[in-house]
Amino acid sequence: MQDIIVDTLLDGIKLLPFLFVTYLAMEYIEHKTSRKTQLIMKKSGKWGPVIGGILGIVPQCGFSTAASNLYAGRIITLGTLAAVFLSTSDEMLPILISQQAPSHTIIRVLAVKAVLGILAGLMIDVLMQIKKGMAQEELRIEHMCDHQHCHCEEGKIIKSAIRHTLQIFLFIILISFLLNLLIGFAGEDTLAAFISEKPVLGPMVAGVIGLIPNCASSVVLTQLYLEGVLGAGAMISGLLAGSGVGLLVLCKVNDNLKENVKITLILYAIGVVSGIVIEMTGLVF
Image (cartoon, rainbow, N blue to C red; front, side, top):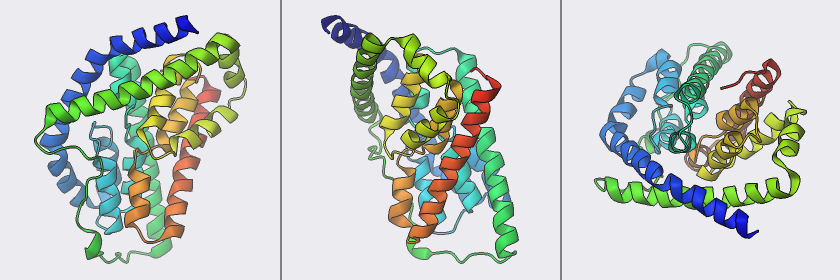
């Protein structure tokens, strides 16, 4: 137990400088580009899913929440919202960078999420047009104010970066400790074999984890993948289904509960099906 605690703390402390530098860069991007990206989204039109899928991979902590508000006001389409939710990576990107994952791994994961988000978004919009015809939905003025819910402080980049770093550092310490404890008793090979022998169960469970409206879900999924416990398909399944607090904000600002449930199920289904296909094809990132 003592060795597990020491190893967990040492591994976590080693990540601190990388996490801080990564979040500092992300905060700079967030404060410099958030308004511009939201304006682009508002003017995206029929190309919304393409633009949303590309912008979704840019590390902006409030982008999925902004998309929720824009959709609630019917400023963007359902396909665009889905593209943003599917492509956004939440805390996956800073963890991969801080743990010095190979650059090709990071690029492939981001590319897969963006492409799947774009394709799914375009398909959803086509189906919605067929269902409703060419009639445009009316704007809902009461939802046109873009409220940010990431609680980042305007103009205080360093302070926000430190807060994000410490928050995710604590998550990593906790998850790493539990994972090291589990591996210590069960064995890494046993855990990995248990999941790899069940290519359907892994993505299904990971998808449920991804739906948790909290940054902890992406931390868990990414850590499990880096430790070799989760396969690429299961990780992608959870990361596609997850949108940070985007779903939580959507439920708050969009009054149609039935629609919110459908959107959640759509995200989960896309994530699980994509994950199962990746698992069965043996794709490695």
